[in-house]
Amino acid sequence: MFKILFFFLFLAFLIGLSVWLTDNPGSVVIYWLGYEIQTYFGVLLVAVLGLLISILALARIVRVISKSPREFFNARKRRRETDGYKALTFGMAAVAAGDKDEATKFSKQADKLLGNPSITRLLSAQTAALNGDGEAASRYFNTLRNDKETRFVGLVGLIRQAQHSGDAVAAHKLTKEAYELRPGSAFIVETLFDLQIANGSWEEANKTLADAERRKVKPANLVKKSRAVVLSALAQSKKLEGNEDEAILASESALDCDKEFVPAALIRAGLISDLKSQRKAVSLIESFCKRKPHPKVLEAYLKLWQKEEDLKKYQRLQNLLDHKVLDDEVILVMAQSALNARLWREARSKIELIIEKRVTVSYCLLMSELERLEMHDDDLSKSWLEKASRALPDKTWACNSCGAVALEWSATCGNCHAFDTIIWKEPPRVEQLHTVLVSEDEERQAQVIENEK
Image 1 (cartoon, rainbow, N blue to C red):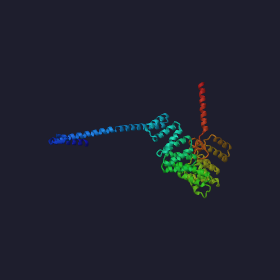
Image 2 (image 1 turned 180 degrees about the vertical axis):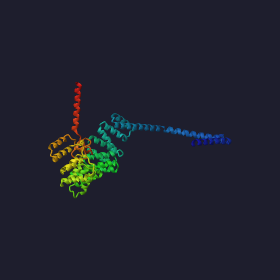
Image 3 (image 1 turned 135 degrees about the vertical axis):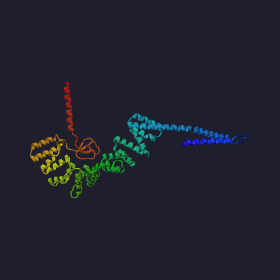
Image 4 (image 1 turned 30 degrees about the vertical axis):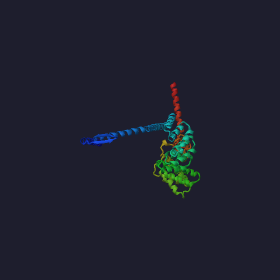
């Protein structure tokens, strides 16, 4: 709108100026080199303006001509850079896809077009690694490592190579160097933590997790769960070393991270040697049992009162678990305690609370003992022993990843070495699977015979 208004105002000015010059033509006389030039002022003004426009146009043409070679080469350079970065992008995509041929082709194109090794070195290293040329890849990654700007990238590449080759020592050393450079990198934190776990360096692993929580590299809830596991493992190792004070401190710190972490409570209960001087610890275990009753923790708790009579132990359990909804395992612990105290009616009433479909080996063994001691029925006792061979297995510590059964809890699986996978669960029933497979084979054979008939 303003441009149109300005145009019409300027046009009106030119028209007005033309009319004024027509009404007032004036005259100009120029003497130059023996010549006399007479003209009107308006004509001279138009001539001067025309000459000025011509000079400006000529200057522009000269400038364009003088800049043309440089512009041409700049445009060519920009086009090569564009094509080079495209080749670099496609090359990295080919590496991610695992396409060796495409990665090699685009790597060469990027090197040729960009002509800057510092930019294409990562692609060259990744391509060499993809083609199985570990020596060339190491050379490229070491070059990146020696450059201040690409040092972290080079270290990450060397770490991956060390992991691939199984060199844990080199991987640990490189990861610590990368961690000092960028402690906020999630990949480096996870890698360093995994290496520390594999080495059983529980104190260092705990420090790594604490630092990760402080820097908010990992969610706080996940860090607390992992720290509970690590601190429990640290307590185990300190206990084995005979350093009970540090073991106690580590197990209590684990419970601070996760108040319902059963392994930490088990370890802490096992470290109570004097009930009078460690009354605070006993109270801690009692609070844990009230909050999260677990059969193993209850058994560890009862062991603290070995010198007491069985009746007194049962009364302690009753006071501890009064008015609580209990699962079958805890009920069995109470039933066994009642049986030990020769409270037959109490033991049988507890057992009757367990539904028949949850009949386990411990259930059958307890029933066998109860029938033998209370009813003096050896035949019925033996029948319960026979049922135990076909009953469901009792829960135990087992790996949630590979299914391996463990005698006690540990931070890592002894079979697959996975971290934080040992949980309290029913073990896999291999014999049941075998029976199913045999039955299926028998059905197939029967089907074949029937078809042949």
